[in-house]
Amino acid sequence: MIAGKPVIRLGNVSKPTLTIFHAPKEHDTGAAVLVCPGGGYHILAMDLEGTEICDWLNSLGITGALLKYRVPKHEGEQRSAAALQDAQRAMGLLRHEASDLGIDPKRIGVIGFSAGGHLAAVLSNPDKERTYPAIDAADAASCQPDFSLLIYPAYLTIKEDNDGIARDLNLTSNSPPTFIAMAENDPVRVETALFYGAALRKAAVPFELHIYPTGGHGYGLRRTKEPVTTWPDRAAEWMRSRNLLERR
Image 1 (cartoon, rainbow, N blue to C red):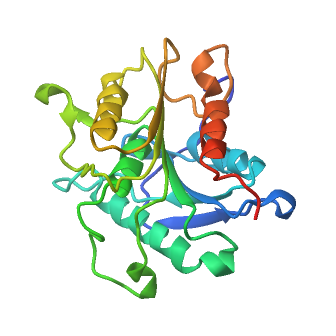
Image 2: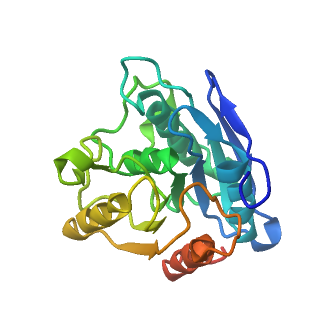
């Protein structure tokens, strides 16, 4: 239970899907965000960090694209291997189909939570364009998001390496502008957000980092007494400051 409500935990996903939640026409900004739920690459919190996030994005005039990526990972493969293929494919499809979807191909971001935050970060910092052979024309479109929101992200640093940036994150000056929110007492360790922010700073990538004293992990956008659950307000302000919420 989170904030008095249950959480849908979806497991054994072998066929990825991408579900589009269109923004209401009366205040559609044309922006879109790929939504990556968390769950430790074992399950997906499909409502807490999925459908509820898309509803919130819609309230801002943003189209939400909910990614149901493959979990759990297969034994012996890299943690995010299959999920990253699904995320890259989804981003390519969104850009390729932007006209039909009524979205701006230059304003497509990604938001991820916990393990989904790691997935969003890997997608934002590609080592190469694709990790799978091209299927069709959609795979010719860039799979890197235009902006990134990482909410209590996991796996971004290596504790045993003095919190050096994880080796699957290829941060460069071409990494997209990033918003990060996390609680200081998060069991994932707040160093994840702090050192990732420092790496963005070193790479001269614009970012905004919010660290709250308490709140733990896995709250989605469900409001509680914890100040960390006000992160959606800060995220909306950040997107507005970057002209992502201007109506077409």
